Image (cartoon, rainbow, N blue to C red; front, side, top):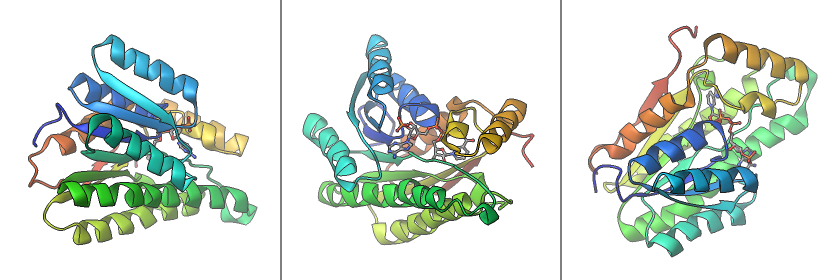
Length: 245
Ligand code: NDP
């Protein structure tokens, strides 16, 4: 099925930023969106906003660190709508710091959310996609994985782990499944709030203020990949501000 209308799309990390913008964008184009994140009040408000514009959205409170949460989110989509067309593995955190600071708990959290969270998504959706004979994985990476800079070693590592996993998945996927990765540059979102170091948080916000592009730009690129004909597999997309080095 080409296009966006009528597709059932699960989005993790849908309560703010890129996930929220993508939910709005796809719902406006006739997709049914099933949303996951940890903050129910944000998800309720987003579902209401989508419904008020004539769209269809549901949510399940989901912590992607918990495999059963991710499975139940994906199952909700199939139970309610009879199929799953797209899983957007988008939830992510970026508590960046210099390795010398030994913020080991932050490193572990990034591995748990940014890497294991995506693997739980693959584990939940792959059997469904195989059974259906169609399906599309979209994983949110980062330009931080393309140009590695100080403080971003572990974050970039987590995103590049998912890059490798996505390419392996694409090769194993066969003729019927699609796998897309999207690497945003600086985008206006709440991502700096996931930084545990207040100084890094301030720097992140300042960089965003200086050059970031709106989350809708990423949503648009994701919609492009989804909207292609079934036999067109958009592989890697990079969308960054022109001002980004
Ligand atoms: P936001 O902080 O605005 O959004 C992150 C989303 O992830 C929120 O909805 C948050 O919801 C969710 N999330 C965080 N932890 C968990 C968890 N354990 N379980 C479920 N959901 C979780 O930032 P962005 O929109 O920017 O981030 C989206 C993706 O884009 C991330 O993967 C990020 O790494 C990537 N990215 C962002 C860039 C940017 O400049 N903004 C640049 C490159 C990549 P909640 O707190 O409610 O759980």
